[in-house]
Picture: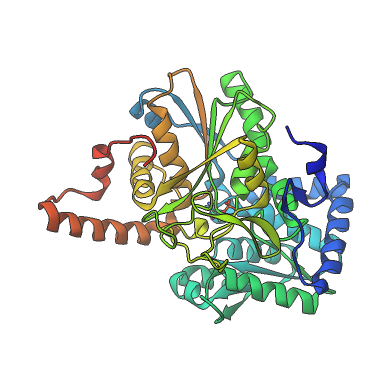
Length: 425
Ligand SMILES: *Cc1c(COP(=O)(O)O)cnc(C)c1O
């Protein structure tokens, strides 16, 4: 368990903190104070609950995936269906929470960064709902790859600002959003999209997602007769959907918790986004945590087939949970995630987000070794409509190279049956 000395405000053991220019200290102080004050109010909690229930679609089902379970040998697999939320992923929990907080703080302009566009869409949605103006920063490269989400944001009334700096992706968009915030802090709240960044963001974003774990507990009690699973699995980009689920079970020693990072296409720096595989302590975007970097300390390039997991740093609380050994972190490759995507489609009629497919792939590896009495919960963080093109491209490329190698010519959706789901690679 955590020692008293680990309880410095804004820190998770040695990780977290506020590594920001001085101009950001006052706004962060104001935000932390308002967050603590406002979210304690019953009226705020009532409003939040009302929107999450009647607008976003909470509680989300905890669905017993019977065909998937029997395909994998009988262990009882439950899917927490965050994919059924409005806008298609868990991100709306946090976007609505922070947009409501901004209103309580008297700020009628909200800004956000986005990579693949999922957080941008969630934030633009919350802003439209609450009558706020919204600006979303997005790298030029990401805008090109995610045209549909750019148009969704615009249709929701948001201004999408193209970022041409650096690698023209998520980390550059965060830099620009921070710059905007410093300049316009009197009127503007910055809605950060994961458990990253300086305090209070990692704990604030976590708290807005705790509802995932709280619901899961209640639903398990009702459906299974025990309010904890033997195993809970979630994918980890920044780490918000996973901490939302895990936080309900951190004190439950019978529950094994596994966070799944993007193993990408290989083991070399630049081929994956697995921060616990080759990452070192460093500072990125205002927080001290595990960061993928080269030997000079420059932020490394990352790769994942799922845009939501493709980020060089992990939320600071996860770095501590890793050191404490309370949560295990593994990595699933692009290929394994694609197989899991097809598996869930074929057995349950659900297209998962490729991020969530990483969690499914990891659960599959464990299911074989678990007795049929065991209960497994997988956080299905989002739906896969956004990823259809990526999956098709991947499969086309794969069957092309397979044809060249072996003359094989089977339908990609069949491939999962032939895969041996061994242990870790
Ligand atoms: C953004 C996203 C993720 C990764 O973010 P976390 O903060 O780690 O949860 C995972 N799944 C989906 C569907 C996402 O949109």
